[in-house]
Length: 609
Image (tube, rainbow, N blue to C red):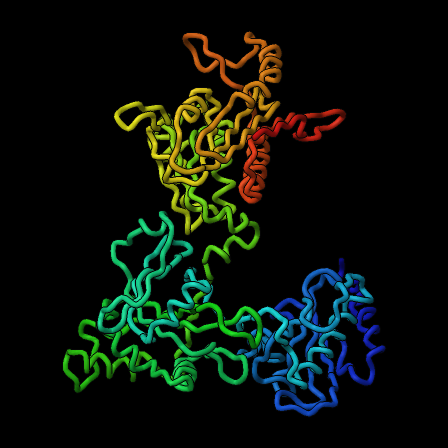
């Protein structure tokens, strides 16, 4: 699209704003900002309610991309005749754009935060009118102090995170940990911070201490993060504030002076905290400083969790860096810090922070709560077992043990979740390591053993202590495992699920029981005719061969077949456990296709007491 075509579209869009006259008035025509490579025009908006935030007639800049009506539309406040602070539902308004025309606090008008619930249109005529109309509505709400209500989910102010640092802070806080924090009177101290990876560097807190070195709070992580141990744990100061650190309505502090002001307004002397912490920080490298504060789930409701925000401290005085006229000691160091390092206009380098609690990271899809608390044993780390395990872990299951004694081989690559890195290694250990890095709270434990029957002075029992688990999922496809479970009477009922697939994964067989004593006779009778059909369909001469040597057929099935079968199995496991079903249930699914593939269909079902 050439420039003339762009201008014609933009003028057509701007003419639609005539419908908003006299509330909205144009101050000039479209212009091109060569600095930001964007198009903009200047307008004024009138609201009749006088308020402390902006004049009744305020000025704004509407900014669009050359691809309009596609691309972003932003509405920014004029540097002089508009909002000078930051309000709710507004980007950080602290800084003036490099073109000098507007501040960077764009209004949040492109989501359903206002009374208008109409979807955003995307035509040339309608999209501009939609955004400016909502800007008018935003200003009216701001003038009447009604930008947010107690029915809206709470939003943090926008922190200007320093993306050049390529770092982030991950913490784990929920309603339970909030109550733990409420039970302690300590509000500042030193925290041990570990580092998971670099590029980006992910920092995460472990243990919070008082300045008397008393443990105050421990952040529990899963196996991958608990076992991570940097060469040197980073010591950082922390403080727990009473509320979100903001000044001038919803503006976060951007300089050291403003941060001191915010903390002082909450009765916190952050300079004194830093001085007390400084003995841990004089190693010649920058350290984090953690600010915690309670937040609610909904605006104006009771607080529910602690949110942590980190910023990077400048390198404090060390070695021979002390003020002139002072000795080479803590007093000399500190005087240099407050006079030369921590200057009033020192920019705060905020770091992106994110809550990695189990509840937060599972929001996009998790198992029901009754499933999340189950202790699960999965027997068989083959392709179907590995797929089921990965679905469970990605759905929030983190208390899972996997039993298998096989070694991972190159032939497993075609349909297993593991990779070349695991060839020649324990299949069980490798799978658990893989699963533990999927979820920061996962505690997937390997059992390098097969399940077998043991008969001794205790009587018949299994080689793995089954009574430690609530749910057992057998994915071996071996009758031997079923016979082992049939031979033992357990101390308490367990959900037992058997999942196996037939030749080519054309059929999927599932058996689910909840008992102390297991009987598979009905299941054997139920699936026998389908097993016979599987055998009749086998042409051994056409089965793939597993390497050169003594002829040994390999079970054929593609990874997509296995993943579909695993997904169906997990859906049924979830339903069986959530319903508390006491009957034994057997299911048979079969792949079907006509002109196109139709998927797995439930073709037979059997229930028995």
